[in-house]
Amino acid sequence: MASVSKKESDLHKFLDNLYIKNKAKIISWLDEIKKPDNQKDGKIPGLLSNSKIQIITATENGSYNMILQWIKNNADKFAYYDFEGIPNSSFISTADILNGDEAGAASGPARSIMVVKTFKTYQDVERWIKDPEIHPIKGTPMSAMSNEYYNIYEKAYEIIKKNFLGATLNNDYTFTHNLFPKNHILFGDVDLVYYTCVKNYYPHLYHKVYHDRQNMLAICEYRR
Image (tube, rainbow, N blue to C red; front, side, top):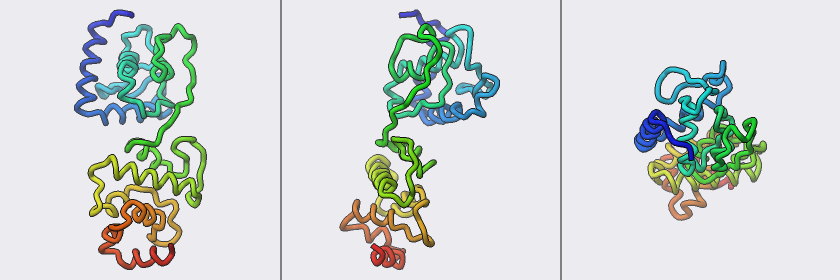
């Protein structure tokens, strides 16, 4: 195994602490460098400063390559992150991160990859909410009127309820309903998909979600 320079060691310690204190900053940075507009002239926004950093460098001690190496070393922390679109450095490809390969640059041109996406976490739900008529796992179009869309919506609802402590019965409408997409709503603000999910999840308590929306509840009950 290649020795680690002091520069890389110090950077990795900094990233360890950053992950503990503010993982969201790292995820946000990864999301930003995926965008083609943020990869112009072979440079991307820096994670550690406001200065841009080179994607391709002559040595493994380039800042971007060292960050990718840290991510590769901590791949388990990013098990559900979609790396598609993340640029490859001179020495590490995103395929290496996912596969845990030691091939690096010796393996030839960086490979394009097909990321196996999941739908299990709050982050997965956030990704789907940004583009709700694309299947979050298969990446295929799905109509907001389809059973497939409903199944994904219901699964997303369950994920939020089980994994996000801020989502409670009392704030379900103002929090969860406001968070979720509205592509399927045809008339006004009557949301039958949301209503069905609430009723299935809270079979004996769902009326409480509509405690100050009795007219809406009556319409939903009638139309279902």
